[in-house]
Image 1 (cartoon, one colour):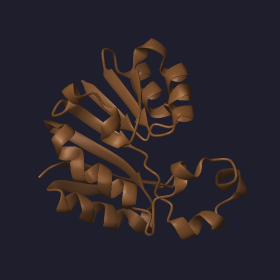
Image 2: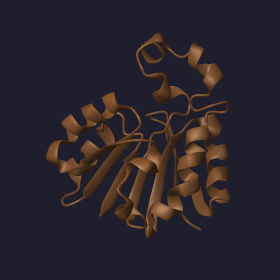
Image 3: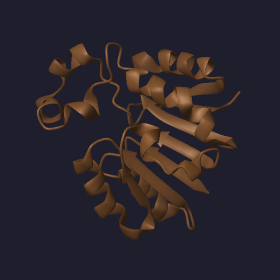
Image 4: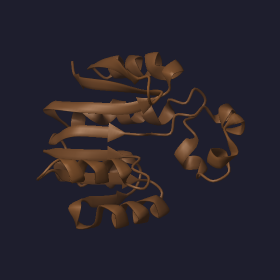
Length: 165
């Protein structure tokens, strides 16, 4: 099984996956070299970490082989960053928060190329805001991916799961 964690930050998702799934091949990528240094430390020799812009960071031989593509892309609308709690807006790199005007700019880029990287039975899982979920699903539809919204009330979390259409 091949898993890619885009916008990996500290590598928490990839680290959790390698801890729970024996034999999984994990690749984590982020544009921020400070984040990828942290991810590399957290993953150790259990995964590969790449620095660069989304898919540009990944080895080309992963194209068409990814079984699970997870992304916790920045999804805060630019104008909403100022209203975030100070522990987030003052201590997180802006690149980790700013999703553009409606918060979906980075998500759209991930979704637009996802089919090229996913295996024929691969899945895309992308975190989104509750109010943005319809836009994330629409971006999936535009990329010929069938998508559904998944929520966890206990965690107050929303994600979109998509597969090839």
